[in-house]
Image (cartoon, rainbow over all chains, first blue to last red; front, side, top):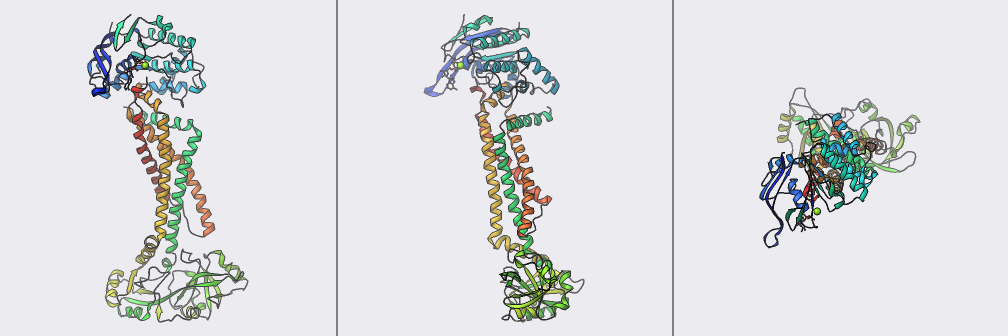
Length: 225
Length: 389
Ligand SMILES: Nc1ncnc2c1ncn2[C@@H]1O[C@H](COP(=O)(O)OP(=O)(O)O)[C@@H](O)[C@H]1O
Ligand SMILES: [Mg+2]
């Protein structure tokens, strides 16, 4: 198996001088291609910070963070943008573009890919929306959809580009039990089919059965459960 | 890199975001439209002013023109000695010289008896001082005592002179002096005069009894064929008194234009109005773009996280600005066309919509939206994908 994410001795702090606040301390972890990993831990333990570094959204300076073969420590913005295009993001808030329909939102992921024709983009986006159970809602705008449906659109948006890695930060936090579980099940099913690595931050123990592995972050340090 | 998509995709996103909020789109378009109409009207009035400022001098028939150096413009001349004009005959290249007398005087409306000021021109009826056929054809008739010609482009407040002539009710008073209107010609009104009357030099003296044939307002010089205007002008400058300005035809037109553009505050006012329209439009478009970026901050940050580059969003903002410019300009042009027609029919000033004018307003609107976009894109930096989780 290939290693998708390899983190060695990663430390990270916010602030500077006397106000420096260490958030991540000497984290070492390796995640294989196709693994589904859950990260839990108390609020403020650094889960989101960890995810933003893995996703190339935040620059870290000490240790080593290799994602899809690219070193992120001391990397340039271009390198991270390139890798980001192979990562699907799912946020706590759905963060869909409210002026676009579900179909147009999902197509946004594919518009970065110049190899595709407009028709291929349409077909793939429709297929992905159908796969998340929204085949009959493709022309709806976010405010015409329920919370669970919106989160499923954002799952479709994250997966339609066939990313190697999906990063999700508490994707079920704003959903009720039922739709939260549905959303994560769909995510797991689709990811398993395509060998996608998933890193999922959650407090929600009801969804822990989808994971291959569960990590706990506490006080900036990681431990396997 | 696919260049169609490079521009097309951000443009399409800009378009989708614009039409999502119709109310805001309408406000934005109205802002651009407002700026557009304001600038069009300012330019229209300014050009009409310049055109009308030269409506009289453009019709003068001569090669060189004399005016007193203290004359700021033809409509408010300072008199000078006719003998100065005669001295020009000393130059062998000068074929003929003719005096022109000007005076503002109240003209009584034949029907309503209301008096209104117009410009009276007195010329030598043995000369062709005007490039106006209708005047030159009536030179013999104007030699008769108390006869005048009336400019049919004068404001309608002077009365329906054409109909009155046909009905033989052609007697009126200029400066309380009775004259007969024996015909019409076409010259055009200016900001200085609402109407024009042309008569012979002798009739002019009857209307203005305090004036003398020896003190003239403008001297018209005709040169022998083939002689150079500029060299004769140079020779005359040495020959004539220092207090006399000598103009070629083009210089005279420019002199009259410059008076309105620089001396009178009117040129400044229109320039100021144009700038104000531009600034107001800029502020409105900037406001719209700015709040749009602020409202889409999370969405843009999300797209950035997904791998969209900063340049993409800059293109989105400029595409929005461009679309607003175009969608504001088109109705703005239509509305201005209507207003030009209205102005032409109401204030009798020529207000043509020229390609040059439309192009320059379009450029102004484009630059306005471009600069609004340039200021607004600073706001894009707020969209930081690290804050999105
Ligand atoms: N942008 C930031 N600037 C400064 N401190 C931050 C920032 N983001 C998070 N923190 C701090 O870092 C710590 C970890 O935060 P976070 O990674 O969001 O934890 P979690 O997601 O596990 O709740 C918290 O103490 C938080 O206050
Ligand atoms: Mg968090």
